[in-house]
Length: 370
Image 1 (cartoon, rainbow, N blue to C red):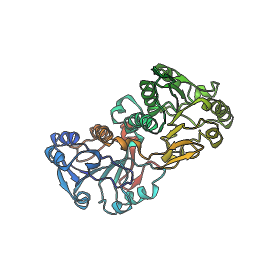
Image 2: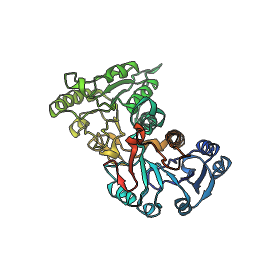
Image 3: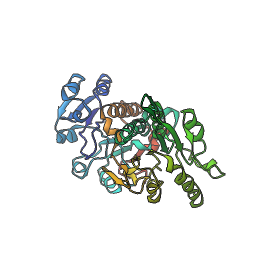
Image 4: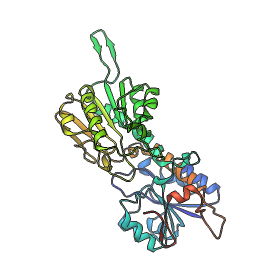
């Protein structure tokens, strides 16, 4: 098969869908890889490294024309959609709830679209899970971003001139990103707290050295979906959790926000009145900013200063460590492609396979996931 790798056009996107190592793996498996000129440069991979791995460098139009499988980080933009040829297989992040028009357009061309963010959280699919691989990096870098904006050190210092107390860090959401943020802040010497609506998260937070902050009641015991994600809680529960959180924030120096609900707007957790009661010089890093934000003042791609509190809204945080993020993402795609039956002339993929069924958005002119 001819695998095409395109340069990402999104403003905040520095990643690339195939690293030189994965190109080498594809070529070894008998595939031809064509990659757009300079596609890997933002991730630190030059064209020479791709050529050495067995890829050939082409223009984007040549790739759209020749590739049988297109792999991307983000769904093609409007200009690129027109260039996707009929019967191509597209593997990417899709965000079906946000890109229905693009999906309909490609479906009319009988393009088969696989949405990588829909890979189920089952044991067999762990090495394909882009959400986990990228969230790990985002959780780590969120703490680094917070430390860079904070006007104090994170660990305790004992000096001849006096003692410096450690910073208090609260991580909102104890999923993959949140747990990595807790672990990173702890390694940097901070006193760390974690909060989540799922009572099952308590043990995970405490195992990393964090202190759990949560209203524990009957509803919280059933706050997790079968896929491992947080459910949306009732208004009554949210009110109780909000009161506890507002009181906690008075003594917090850094907040890392990671709470998100797949396919929906991120829950608003940190409200204006809470920020007004925080200490001057505090920092909030909102990893959920692109899906609406956990903090009321968050703005995509900006650092907002309110009441001497910095609210950091960096877009695409995994892209801020693009080399590592690209390597992991491309390995996820490579593992996903291992499910495909390249030798079959009748069926390229098995619709009975749970992973295929969960990710195949459309095929043969039919919308399969809405």
